[in-house]
Image 1 (cartoon, protein in one colour):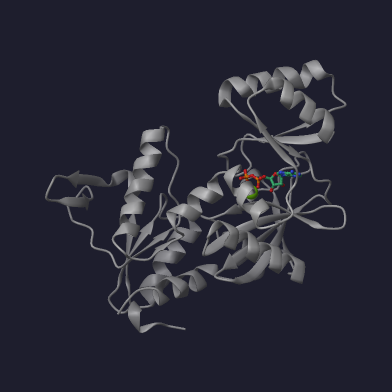
Image 2 (cartoon, protein in one colour; image 1 turned 60 degrees about the vertical axis):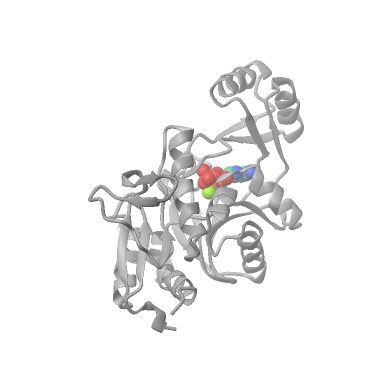
Length: 305
Ligand SMILES: Nc1ncnc2c1ncn2[C@@H]1O[C@H](COP(=O)(O)OP(=O)(O)O)[C@@H](O)[C@H]1O
Ligand SMILES: [Mg+2]
């Protein structure tokens, strides 16, 4: 699979922490192929634009001339302006006709838990019933209907800011919690809680293939199974249903590689989300699969001679 296009190619790796397992393995494995790997921290890039010129440069004022871009991690931003500047920098790489993995569209689709669900629905994929509203009354009626509900940020990750509400609690209790969240977020994302065997499934997809999966078992005091929240990874044998759902989910968002979260409901799987900037560490540790190699193969196949 080692591609001749790799020789001498200059690959930008968008990252925030060069010591993170996925970022450092991307850098190491790109270099192993004989290509150059250039770490790019988006918040250190500047743009210069005039009628006749456009350039992007880093703190050392070196113009960036890249053959491809691999995105590990865009990083958090505290303002809409900052995050949109980062995405505009990436879009400009796309506009200059070099391969960018994942595409900015895929990353934005995946980051948005409303729009991604809309795309999953269009693709006929099984998802838990979800209501998005800024109306407290609608939210209260939804919790009554769901019985057990999770409330999540639309742009959330790593299991942060997710709570579970039960309709058996006194209404005043969850009404005050929802009012507080509405003030903070302006909009609520309410989802039916999927009764599950105390774990979820993270499937790693590259191209059109599911490479492996792990169960993630939450800490005993939590229902959130993100590894970053202290959950334990356990090897999971992929079934046909898992493969098919995970590959279709990544495809629905246009992601070339993805960490797809599934959960085992009663008798069938549900899709929870697609992460288009996933960590490869858990699956390497538990299954011995280095997904970065396959992602680099895919990227280098798209680099022109
Ligand atoms: N509808 C749900 N039913 C049961 N558990 C859920 C549900 N939604 C989320 N969870 C739990 O919370 C975790 C994080 O939710 P997820 O939607 O993947 O958001 P994040 O982007 O923060 O990872 C899931 O991996 C799962 O363990
Ligand atoms: Mg998740």
